[in-house]
Length: 506
Image (cartoon, rainbow, N blue to C red; front, side, top):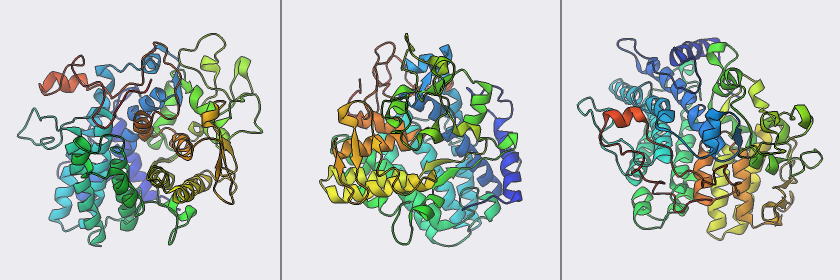
């Protein structure tokens, strides 16, 4: 398993200090550039890029997604509005800033240029994977975004590129990244690549998994029109083909080694290196708690007993407190009478300030395969990929072999209750696709990707929001960008949902 050496931890700590400088409220994102150091080298730029990606992926993007999809519940007025499917213009300013001007795309493009100038092609490829991750995150959350004209110093008001064109461009970026990474020329020193210590093939597999993710984003849109632009048609088949080259099990990888190849956000025990979820919990302990939908799926709808609980329950959450002491129970939207509200189960993994969050993983890649196979009618292959995905989860959480394969997953609703036989991979209860999507929802805890999955599949079923509003269709454009760029529409005329989301989930 990848272990930071002291030099790597020190570099990350220094970068985290810069990223978090002046950030006293973890609702807000950093507004400083960790690379304002004159004439930075590609290696220095890479440190800032990786740390910024780690922070961005585990801050507002993930917190809002978790509350929208009821993995978590907003239990104070600030996050209560998020639970009501309401996101203001000011709520996304920091996220937008991290994707673009701070240590985001500006930093990445400079890193690519300098790496190519110095014939450090592997390093350039790593920057390109970060570009694809960050811009892909923005396109998934916001829809149409500045990209073709973004970070051009001669263009102060970049246009919004259609979402499907951004996705098509990112597929090309990832193809270029794979070529550069496979060149074997100019890898960064291990100490400055926090994710994979300069090992190019791990980055190649991450790039293929991202390609699969982005093809899958369009699998539910009509196969013509925008989907044809985004992935050239046949999005589901292309997602499957890309996933087979991504982070997964099978020769020469098994589940254990595949998890070592997860693209993770790495953190440390020093205060300058802590996981942002942990820091948020310390600074804002009453903003959110566990969400009913996720906890109900984990505990099989019986919060007073643990005999039938998913073994990940105690990894994700602590038992509830107060009048609900000893129970695993999440807070429902709106926190009505009898709801645990702030006494609901709290996040357990946040007790670890150095917990490393998987951004693109072995389990996600195999879930993509499983979904694609299931929807293409290849049931036997879908079951095998589902078994591989759960095997990755067992290794990741250090669970006994087959503990997830033999677990009765789901809640009290019959349509979500199913069992997988470890020996044959056969399912009993719900349709196979329901099981795949529900298990992926559980596995991608606190990953922004879950928001796209739930919007496009409407799985799992969510409880009604306090106001009755459906799942919000997209993140709101930030006020700061709208006030300076006339190409950003006012909230009242902005699209209700993105082009790759075919319908609204109630």
